[in-house]
Image (cartoon, rainbow, N blue to C red):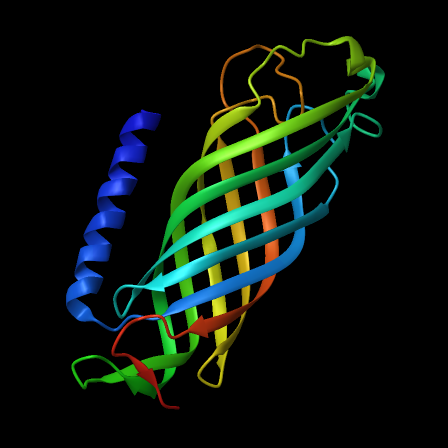
Length: 228
């Protein structure tokens, strides 16, 4: 199933890219940001921890962008104060991952001309946008067990395929800068992000993040001029 989802994602990315080549309304945007995230795992009481994200967006269509993304963060949790307090498990996890994802603009407001493309057509961009996204990639994680979990198994894989999705919004400041907020969910093909799998089956670990970002639009396409 995971292989099929990955193949479908690649086909969609390639199809969207080809469509963008015909459309020629192309700009590239570098994005960097940070926020807080939380892991929902088998060990309860997950804490909010810092998460950082950076990537590059490629505008391929009026409503679509393709984004190459990297994420780095931490997660932590403890049985203390939960219904499993007597178990005494706790963990700290560091993780890093890369994803390829599609963003689709659901809503746009206040479209304005920002430039001219290689065919002499006006480039129009909205001041406000709301979008949804989905994608997939690889996630590396390194749990550090604590409490009574310290003697648990450690021979599990630390690299996993992950599916991601969520929604976000952007506000454009002039022709180059954007401010954004994004809510994302990572669904890894692993149940060991906290270093513990109670029944060694199923996929129950989920990672949720809220990230604020700043973007800078680059003029990397030959023949395109930003004029706003």
